[in-house]
Length: 407
Ligand code: GLU
Image (tube, rainbow, N blue to C red; front, side, top):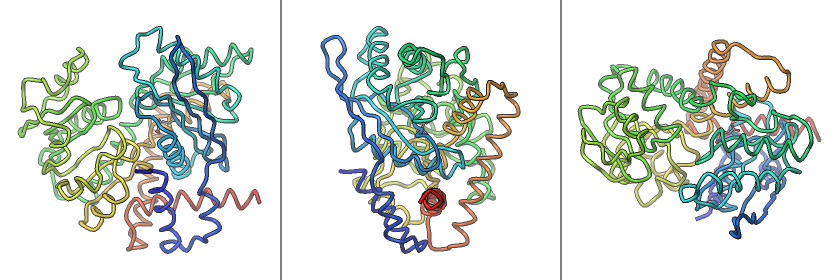
């Protein structure tokens, strides 16, 4: 199954929905530059990519993931989504993504460091604060960013903290970055609840969260703190269900102790597939892409879905759920809090100014709510588009405007 093909079809639909010309759509069909290297570390080989999809609005921007399923099709799709996400977020970036086909769970610290440094060495010529700026993604974190920054600075011979974001605070990172994806997603979730679950009290809204990593865990904590009833969560090993609502702080302490959520005692163990099919009001998808496909789309009972992961619903499933009236808050809006705070970090690195954290928190909130409103207003105005299509239209319009000014 090619995700790239899915995306091209999603783009093609904008011709009819927003009168975008075929030439304009064709200009978005291909990535600007695909860089591929086979990294060699301790006699093992790891395929690795950095794909700059677009630099029309500014330097490339997007994370680097470590996962055994990484492929060129996946990295290119993620780079395409970053292009739309950054455009919709109204920040001065094109879109890019990177990945290494590698299972970090099987590696020790020395190997993780060696692989991270090898990546920076291999791709240093296509990275840089004005060229393409990586960040964390699935199974990479501030330590990964620190190794990559250090390696890059050794090669170029001077400091350039703006070449990467999601760094430790001591290296020019920003505290807000750690839970920024979930924080942004939560602002959007509140807006969604205001529009679509208007008469409900949070304690009557049942929520399931797939994925208990950086995005899903913080999202569950924020929703639980506001009294939403989190009835199920899962990690890569399986899930846990409790119809009275799970105690998220105790569950996250359990997880922090190195356990999997499925073995937690206050609930019934369920599989990831069962979690997706629960009859809940809100399903938060915070794991990987292609979790809902045509194979399970007709079993999905949730009436509202928030995509905190990138691409968790494939095109065929998307059509099926749309036809059924499921409200889907699309990834390019829902998870854009991460890259918005990356932008704050990059801007600080470039100016040398340190901005007040409360001010930045407020700015993130303002941007997320404002971007929701722009998407929601277009959705209402058009009347025949999904929330995703409204978000795509706004994003594509801005990239095309930049392209036109340049031509
Ligand atoms: N990996 C995150 C994403 O998919 C963050 C990207 C960034 O901060 O550049 O949006």
